[in-house]
Amino acid sequence: MTGEPAGNGGENHGLVGIAEGVPPDVARDRDRTRRLEAIQAVTAEITRELDLGTLLNLIIERAIALVGSQHGRIWLWDETEQLLMPKVPTQSEEFIHEVSVPLGESVVGIVAERGEGIIVNDYAASPLAHPVLVRRTLCAAIVAEPLLYRGRLLGVITAYDATPGRAFTEDDRAVLTLFAGQAAIAIENARLFEESSRRGSRLSAILDVTKRLARGVDLPAMLTSIVEEAMRLFEVDNAGFRLLEGDDLVLAGLAGHAAAAMPRQRIKVGQSLSGKVVELGRTIRCDFASSVDVVPDSAAAAKRLGYTHFLGVPLQVGERIIGVLSFRAARAFTAPDQELAEAFAGQAAIAIEQSRLLASTEAQASALKAKNAELDTFVYSVSHDLKSPLVSIEGLSSVLLGEYGDRLDGDARNFLERIQANVQHLERLIADLLALSRIGREARPLEDVDLAEVVGAVLEELSVAVDARGVEVVRGELARVRAIRAQMEQVIRNLLSNAVKYLGDTERPRVEIRTIERDDEIEGLVRDNGIGIDSAYHEKVFEMFQRLNDVEVPGTGLGLPIVKKIVEGAGGRIWIESTRGVGTTVHFTWPRAQGRGEDHGTS
Image 1: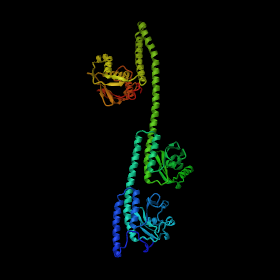
Image 2 (image 1 turned 180 degrees about the vertical axis):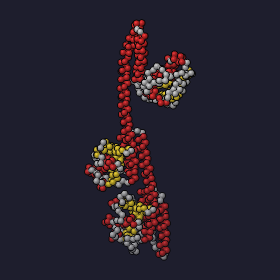
Image 3 (image 1 turned 120 degrees about the vertical axis):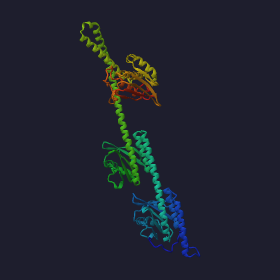
């Protein structure tokens, strides 16, 4: 359609020209052919360009060449703002920065609304003229075409001229219509490429934040890292977190001008836009002017910094809201911006939750360590203090039996002997308790310990019980380890004596001990073919005072707890494999390079 008749008096600056001696119809056909060829050439050129900014400038340059005009402009449709926004080629006038057009207003808005091209000659006199262009007398005539991609509005392309008497023709509009169709395809391709690149960059940034999160960066550094990365990708100059503390939202993890944009250190849930995000539990994307929830000092800060739009995303762990991530900008935030902000908020929520869990775990571990140290001190003190009266009881009962035994009847002698037996048991129990409490307190250095020597010495101690029972002892390969020798002797002594004690009535009793060397640890095992242990008790045997009642054997029930504490204090593990009536294998590992136990065996 045309806004005004195309007029015959104006000079045509396009490719059309009437050659001398050539009939007008033939000349017009030749010019149309040349224009079609030119459109094919420029179409091939613009479809190769994928940078959107460069492409828009190229489209303008080729469009004005096709219709022979002085200037051109592309107006892209902003779905969020519902406006046609001018895109200014590098060589164009400054005035265009002031102009944005809604649907139905001026030539550009009418073309966008109707989806049809317009020619307006004698532009200043037209009711469709834009006041800025008229005021600056920059346009005598204009031709405009919609940029449509599969029926969807991308924008409008215009060619205009300030030459007095300039008039565009229907041939000009036809050429621009053909070119606009190809330009729309090129713009959409460039947009898709740009969006794909942006998404790739954003996903890469989220992945980078996730990797840093996995490395265990402390919470303040992690939050700052997240908002700095988000700020860069959004191309804004502020981003910040507020974390929920009771009913307050407290500033944390700020980047750029966030502190100036959020002047209050604390706000209440429901107060201001960030407070509303937490109260409602959903993202808020809006402009400040349309919101009634902006508190005065925040509104003043936004105005001072030139911010017109807000984006706030809740930090959510399951159903629980723990804070808010927010941005402010001088532009509208888009749906992709919201999607990215929600991804960053998800990473922040993970960081915060992990940090809090870690802090809670460390506090509990510290409290438990303190209580264990207190218990060890108590056990050591009580055990030490009990030794003196026990020595007196044993001494006095021995005197009674030695000097007055012949005057006592059978019951009295039996009672004294039972007292002595119980005292001896209690002395063994105290010795074991003292040994247990000393583990981790001994200030002795590590040394190279030959397990073959240790096993030999322990078997010498157990020789009477081994020979009396006819036990076959099998010694395999035995490695050297870094350990406190006395502790390693306790481990081997307890494991071998347990194996011998719990052989039961096995016809061919057998005990095996050996080690297996691995890259970073040495595994030791002690295997017997004795009474075995039911699977329900595989963990309980490592608890204090837990004993098997299948056979009557001496002991305090502290042997395996002592072994467990020594092994785990050195950074190893201990477990058993056993079947009732078949036998038991105790496995333990010992690190080649001591970590926790390197400094004098402390655990």
